[in-house]
Image (cartoon, rainbow, N blue to C red; front, side):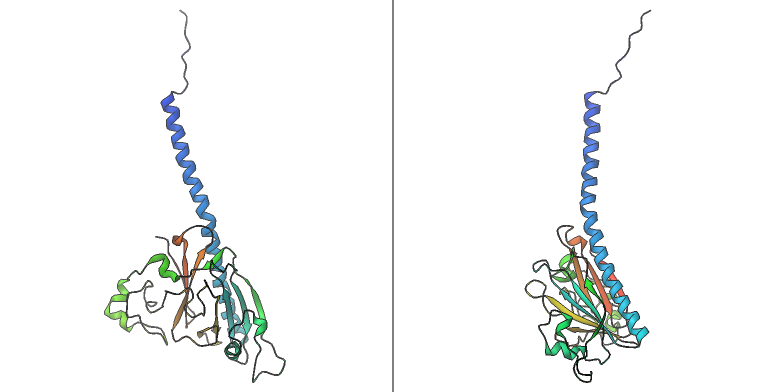
Length: 260
């Protein structure tokens, strides 16, 4: 008896089904690859900022001297990366130097006054740029997440929650206790400028005893017990990739993400 060989190839329906599945998987993989670099760059920028803060705190404690972190940040419109300088402020007169030169753009423009010896300069032990793919978020963290009320911030207990020199918010805010009172409508809550028409500039002071204070570009201190800075990657990722860093006047640092 003669055997006939049966054709075991794929049918048109089977091939169409497999092709459709492959196309869907490829689209998902491409989308993931598109978003991943943005999240990686943002995380890198946030981590770099936290690392600079940690270094400044350590130097203040180790040197038993006041240490400051100066920021000069542009938003997406202005386009320049975030610059920083970590300097020793042994005479505690950096704020006065900023007041005398309110339009400063570089540390070299700031000169120590009395009681510093003539010809003195602020000692820089770290400076540079943050990740160039990260910018400050002009509308603050609220632009990314909206105003979300935390139960802890709306309770009676929240009215008694506050860090030293800080006041609890009288309205629901996006940060949980004990950060309810941290304003978040600005890209940098203690800085001067909006990042769109004017650079965002400010300074964070770290004391040897662990205390932290904030001041704007003119050296005017912030009355708040904490401050926040919002970041967003450039060129994609959307507002869901935004992050905010909160620094308290006790040295606590916490990062919040807009991702759902």
